[in-house]
Length: 190
Image 1: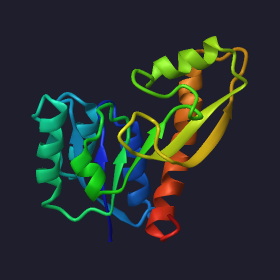
Image 2: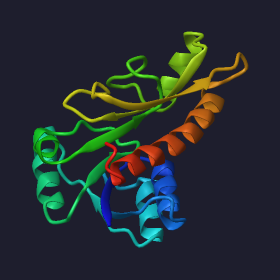
Image 3: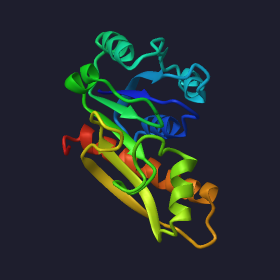
Image 4: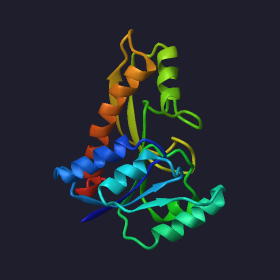
């Protein structure tokens, strides 16, 4: 079985999409752990509802977080770590040992970097009158949203779109694209 760990800081809708695709047989994988830096993240409740173990990060600094996570993760078999709405920088210990991917709600390199997440991204796209937005799945490295791009999906931006309506369209595309990318890892295509 292909072993995933999912990091999430918020609602966990992307985590739920992964869980749903595992349960319906689209993904031949097992989520070994859901990790969050936010003890109130709804993603933790989603994991618990499906009997998936959870872990809340205790460390406050970047270096302490890297050490803590490397110790916790060393105890379980992991093929891939998926950042699904996780907002903290990943440290060198994890980057050395694991393959990590992230989903980002824009067509990187546009609208990426520190502070560019969620509605901030969608509002920036609307304000710039972009004809397209989309989702990018990329490898995680030591800089926010700068890792090698694996896959992108374009989403048309309509003149009537708001940040909220664009977010909904991008999230639908994100969930499909992420499942396809995870399947590529499972099948040895990445």
